[in-house]
Image 1 (cartoon, helix red, strand yellow):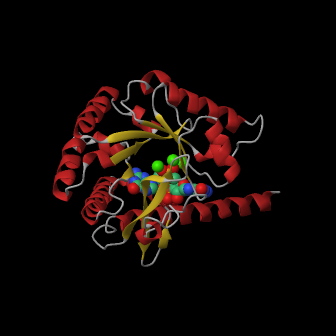
Image 2 (cartoon, rainbow, N blue to C red):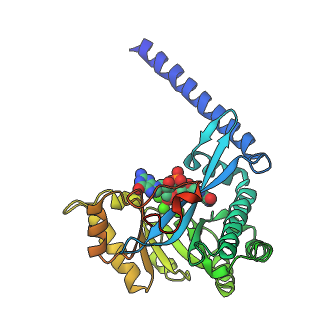
Image 3 (cartoon, protein in one colour):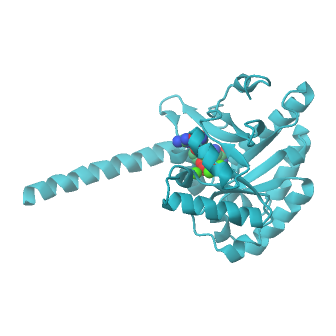
Length: 276
Ligand code: C2E
Ligand code: CA
Ligand code: CA
Ligand code: CA
């Protein structure tokens, strides 16, 4: 028994050492990701009940020369811990706004918007509104085409300050979606204070839509809550026709997932007329 204990501990040490090493490697490499041109945006269509694309979500992709493709699930938390999320967030916003302005000029996709994931930390600096304003101005994007996806972790920030910043951004024309709703620690009382336009049903619930399942109960509750608050409700991670139908019956209005299109860095995948 003693022997296997020793083995377990050294195994654990090795695991920990390599995960700490990985963490350090990622955090150092992230500092240069923007300047070295290693980031890209993938777009995933968001559709209505007719399956027509109404907007896209912008999702970060990072290809490092040695580390390879690193998943945002792995590097975003590190970028938040090291604050490099500020410059990375600016980059995402710039790229998205440039795309919007480009579509407008090209008269392709000009009716479509882009949803951008915004980290709660980006609000903490206090100059977020100013940064967004500058990026909108320099890109020439139409502010009403821009939507920010926020998470419940925002409620851990100074709520009055967050609401004030959101109101200022709303005056510019930007709208807001609450992402991954129901997976965090949102207080409903606080939630109603946020000037939201959209509620996003998390993939975890969509994955579990069986009869009498917890996921189905939660999805249904979230959808009716959103509808009663006059918010657009969108479901993410829709992979099957069955999920699509079920969510529609529950009152969900917009949908996103592999059923309609995977995130792609090649916008040509989404040329108008090409089964969108
Ligand atoms: P999220 O915002 O919840 O994004 C949805 C994730 O689900 C994306 O993973 C997307 O590729 C994936 N997905 C979409 N449809 C399906 C489907 O039908 N089935 C399955 N299994 N998955 C699907 P991704 O791109 O790996 O991003 C992971 C997370 O990283 C995002 O979760 C978001 O929290 C974060 N993230 C991505 N880009 C950014 C960004 O620009 N800024 C910030 N702050 N966070 C980002
Ligand atoms: Ca999102
Ligand atoms: Ca989400
Ligand atoms: Ca999610």
